[in-house]
Image 1: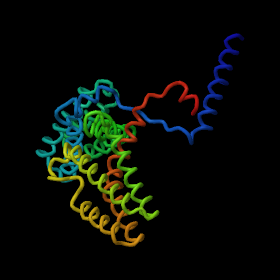
Image 2: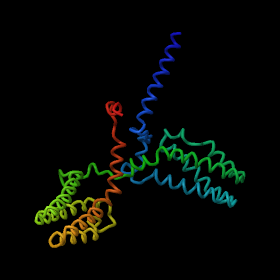
Image 3: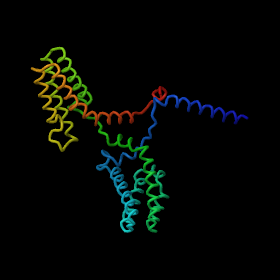
Image 4: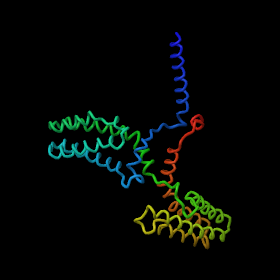
Amino acid sequence: MRWTYFIVLQFIFILVIAGIVYKHKDKAVIIKTPPTDLAQWYKPENKRQVWLHNMFKLRREMQAVQFYAETKDKEHLRKWALALNEHYLKIGEMVSSWNKKLDISTLSSLQANVDNQDYTGVLAAVKTLQKSCDSCHSDYQAITALTYRAPDFSTLEIEPLVPFNSHMEKLSKQVNQIKIASEDGMSDLAISSLVDLKKDMSKLGQVCSDCHKKDKVSYPSEQMNNTLLSLENSLKTGTLKEQGMDLGTLAVQACARCHGTHRLAFGTKVLLSKDSSLTDLLKH
């Protein structure tokens, strides 16, 4: 009887926990994080994006196997099937904990069907293998991209002892100062704030060029500089409406477009990589 009570209590405890979790489902998201040893196959730990290129090879090889099975081209089919076999098994070689996720039986079946020229069997095996790949991608593809491919601005400095995020806050305040001074008729303050904004945008551009190497001047762009000139003229002689339009255009060109690419990705990366304390978990 004692064990019966114990099992019943355990069952009730599990039900209570499950109920609490379900009740708070709108406040928490369950995300599977990739193994830490995956990092060695991505930059900066590796000189090349090895993992990513292996995935590209697999996608291409699966397409080729399907194509040549449909056209019943046994020579090309064998070539691509061997390559698929090599790079599929490489997943487990690079990340040993993912060995158990590999569908080895389907891979073996695919190779046997290739050898036997069973094209229908090959197509069925490819379809099954694709489902296995899709299952893993559903769990890990987005979080892996955010973890290893999103830019990391946390260690950047605009100049010695000036962190990147502090400089970005400064730019935001300058844009708002221009708007405030413009609306309140303080043209001198608006123009001086614009001068500061130009200078600090150029400083930011020096950091941007570290990644955007192909562009001679990636930030501020020629389009941004034209808008800055138009804004300067409107602050001197234009109407309040013209000033607002120029400032709004600049905010889209110089802030929103870059934020849409970098800020969202980096912010999500930081959020997902943050270690949650017991207190944080209990709050949820």
